[in-house]
Amino acid sequence: MAGVETTRDGAVLIIRLARPGASNALDARMHADLEAALERARDPEVRAVVLTGEGDVFCSGHDPAELERKPYELSATPAERLGRHVLALRSLEKPVLAAVNGAAVGAGVALVLACDIRLAAESASFEPGFAAAGLAPEGGTGWLLRRSLGGARAFEWLVTGHRITATEALEQGLVSELVPAGKLAERAAEVARVFAAMPTRAVWETKRLLDAAETSTLADQLGREAFAQADLLRSPDAAEAAAADREGREPRFGGAPPEAEHPIRLAVRDDLRRWRLTVLLRWVLVVPHALVATGWVYLAQLVVIAAWFAALVRGRVPDGLHAWLGRALRYSVHVTAYASLVADPFPGFRGWPGTYPVDLELAPPTRQSRWTIAFRLVLAVPALVLSGVLSWIHWLVALVAWLAALALGRVPRGMRDLMAYCLRYQAQTYGYVLLLTGRYPSLASGSGFQFEEGPDVRDERHAPDLRDVSR
Image (cartoon, rainbow, N blue to C red):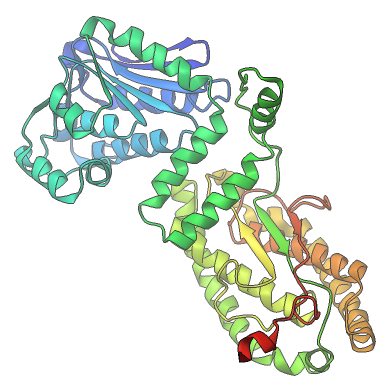
């Protein structure tokens, strides 16, 4: 029966659009089968995916009969279903290769653009076809094409909708290699096996970072890259690469993910010394932050409701809401760390990452189970109770630390570390409630911690030499 076929070749999953009698046009059955195939591709044993078509056409777009159906007859519009496939392809944590065996038209072009590597038969062709039908681009075609061709060329091609050959696609960078039609399947399998043998997690992080780079600031991108690199350094593949280099052999990557670590981490880079005057006046100095933090809390309650509904529909929190809630949580960590003497400098008011010695590092948003999203508050009750207990411990220790800092001019390390432990668990708990992560908070002392003593600028060894300045 016509639909979508999947076959395994070792660690490579081949997804074939198999409705040749209708030029592999996407109908309801094809959409359902393709969705199931892309879900199958998430299997950790699959380390590379090939998307291709049956016969001499890759995909001719939507079946016209589907476009003529009334909205109430559809569970989702064809454009919506295509969008889901594109998002599924982009979110696969492994390389996806398009083997374009023939004409790709309309939605077929969107599927090709959503893949990471694109090979084409010499007989292949590409035709957007949207404007000619009185329609706008769909399936992320405009967004993806702009990244490949630039704004002006993407606009010209999408509006005129003219057909381009495989050779022209190669020249414009839409595909990376042309292959004789009879050799395409063999060459695609060969390339897929090469990518399947690579460190899969590193390939995925590269894919994710490139996608994020289009809309990131440099500072945001540097943060994402640092987080990814720290994560990958703990992966079995990184260890295998180092071992292979020492032993003078080729690495044998297994594709296993890094050791699980909580996606919300507390980084402590402050020294233990405290100014006695600011310690004495700490509760007065923190008042402006207490007022601002109260406003953040009320706003966060509204934002998390919007995030909850969006996550129920999409299976993940939208990037913008995730970023705002992350800033709110990070700001509360900065203020609590200052108030309880876990850190000494006066914090800023905006919750930006990397701006305070006791900082919160958040992984980017990922998909979460809709069941856990729906019942998040119920599931969080045990963690909230424990977080409340740790909060009492935190502030009791803070009181003793306040007396110690007044007497000694420093906070004892054990007290600082215990308060940091309590603060980290509280941050992970509220991060779970705020849908910043689907991971439950961890009691493990090593999960989500990074300690790095900062230089003591009041120590003469680190102070600037003012005599040099006066010269």
